[in-house]
Length: 225
Image (cartoon, rainbow, N blue to C red; front, side, top):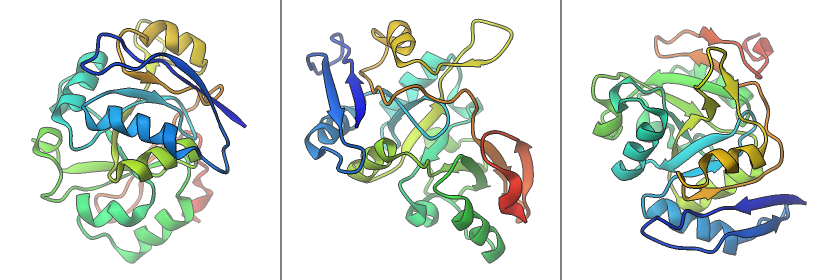
């Protein structure tokens, strides 16, 4: 059983009472997932678990959510390093240009898993995100909570890792209770999926048609062999 703690911001345009929800990892409760999706569709921002670190997420089609996440991270959309978190690879053609079969085979081997693939963006990428960017990061985390949220939403989450910017050393939040303390008045829902990892995803740039390792994270590089 996985515990989910949903902490809702009472200052948001919509209101839910804070609640503690236990969700069976193998048989997700659609009622609770639908409540999270309702928040996302109204431009809400959530903090949720992935197969690596906790992340900030919003509906990719909501400019309001993108702007709020940027404010929280104190970054500009055109200078952000957002990922599109998908439930599977079916969204590739919606946001990325066609990729070589060799790259697709590696992605199928790696995903779902702790990897971010940088691909060449197509014209369907929301303008607010693209602007001067020519690439898009694709994630398919191996995490059932994340999977069910994205699947129920019907389109990817716009997402970025949750970490502490207050120190010179980059530290990722892993304790849901600490996350709650920091963000309970800033986001609309905090989803407690247990302690997260302290290591981010491995980032592989495939935008040129070949794999370039940008960051070694939790994902093994054995998939490239």
